[in-house]
Length: 173
Image (cartoon, rainbow, N blue to C red):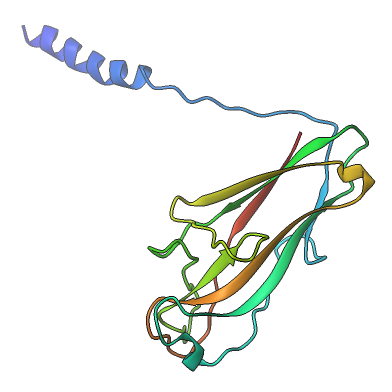
């Protein structure tokens, strides 16, 4: 009897593990594109202006709007393509803005808000990401994804450093 229970106990964990699936997806392509942020490649910093704490006294106040753009160029020749941009934040406020991760002497009750190209709609990162697609011919010129970054008050902001980060990815089909 003890041997039957032991053999059944050994099979149970393997049964549970065997029912899960991991799928890996990818694509091999002859197409690549270059991407720059404000004309620079790789990891880039977007410098917002120094602002007065008095401009961020009440929750919801915004100031320091700074435009920045992702530019896609150098794609291989071809017909119209869909160029997609994906922005991902791993740390957001409850209002969907980017958390201040500055070290040393960080400002408090202030976050970075990202607006899409119409400069009026804040992007809500509470779900972690934002995606957009443009149908364009990147070989006949550049494809641009314009955004604006600005300070956002989450309460009465205090003086200090502000830093936030986004990861980005480009898709081209």
